[in-house]
Image (tube, rainbow, N blue to C red; front, top):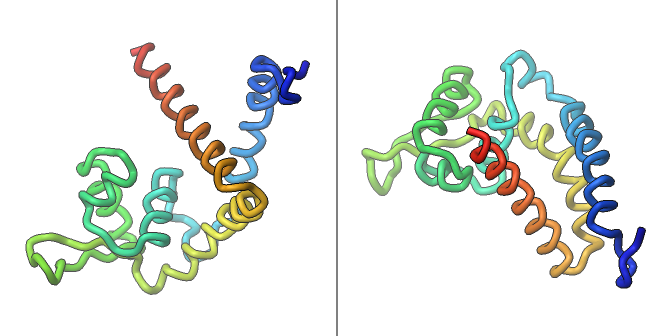
Amino acid sequence: MSTPSGGPAVDEAVRTLLLLMPRIVGRVKRLPIPAALQGFDLAPRHLALLAHLEYDGPVTVSELAARLEVAPTTVSLMVSDLAKLGVLERTADPADRRRRIVAIAPAFAAPIAEWLSGSASAWERVMRDLAPAERATVVGALRAYEAALEEGLTDRS
């Protein structure tokens, strides 16, 4: 059933999204992992971390934690795991030798870019056809959905 503005009613939109989201997640999970990254048991949290480093460049663990919206200790553990595998490098910050800068190791830069490109190119195709306000609505709706899910999990604990 449509609303007077021509869009779907709330219950129809929710139904459509509940059916759509598992298909989207399934397709994202089927994006091929480059050979150089296979066998590393990478999880979605690693993909988010690698995406930030790929798109924003080298940063400190604290900056990465802020961008990922998780505790610095969580990021530190992920960085340690990926550094042991050789996927990430930690170097001294030239501005403050006590701080460490995290970056993608050169040998893994191309495979990580390849892995992220499937999802990124799909988003670029979708976003390119939207007006800036529509893009803001999509991003805002996804952020609000994530927050509502988190709130629901918190309420159950």
